[in-house]
Image 1 (cartoon, rainbow, N blue to C red):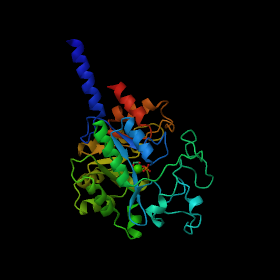
Image 2: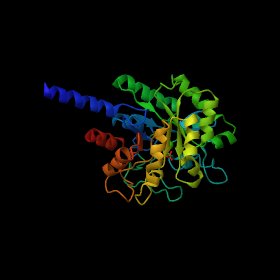
Image 3: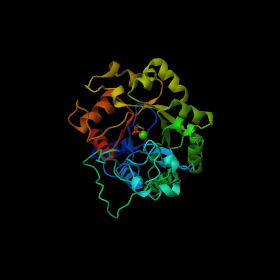
Image 4: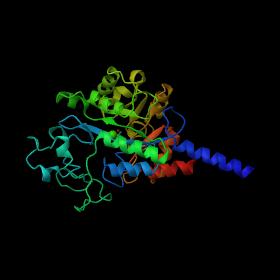
Length: 333
Ligand code: G3P
Ligand code: CA
């Protein structure tokens, strides 16, 4: 009898750690940052599928638009650091030498091969021990938001799980300058796949408050997350007044890790941000936990996760290593 009870408790604990959560102070959400990007090139369907298989609660695509207004998964405004665009379309850079995604149709972008992120000038791998660029027959493609949703929703059917998506509207003001209503386009795609209410398993994030406000202006009920960078421009957001404002339009914040623990390993303002955000019912999902880019104040990835998830008490983390974070949570319960 006692052993059955133990098994039941263990199973419930396991399910709790796998369940996505929005309410703060309960389960911990593991977000597959750009997919399982420690193992496969970022923002590829293969990388998202791997992150899903590793047990992530959310799959994170960064979004940019093509010239014909299709949301695609891409971190940078331009394509040269994560694709072979300079080989396929050598004459299509702007005067600054960059190949902007917005200058290419989806059909053109689909001709590109996604590569592991490299330095723009030296072409050296940003993460030298990650997936190599071997120039073989293996070709990864730039996915659309629609394809990503179909992948995640399909896997949700075939596995019986309920993994969410966590799209980021990148460079919102810049898209507006180029003449696109980025937020309206993204909402249209999300709605086409049934993401319309606060109960739907999607969190839309942005560094730009105006992007989130535009989403609200368009009437969305989806849960929104305000990203907070480490630079001085974001300082007003990490005050009581700033959090009061964020709480009027968002359900969470995604701060740089350095907003909680600084580079020397010191607590920032005695964990003010986590405490005050959660007091306003904002979930806190800091970015980005990387086992191969540990901050100097920890020796292991588990130490880092312990610090943020349990000592700081955040509600989830963006990580390039969803497998390690899920394993940590399972063992920690
Ligand atoms: O969106 C959270 C985190 O991904 C922010 O950083 O630059 O990887 O989009 P970035
Ligand atoms: Ca992001």
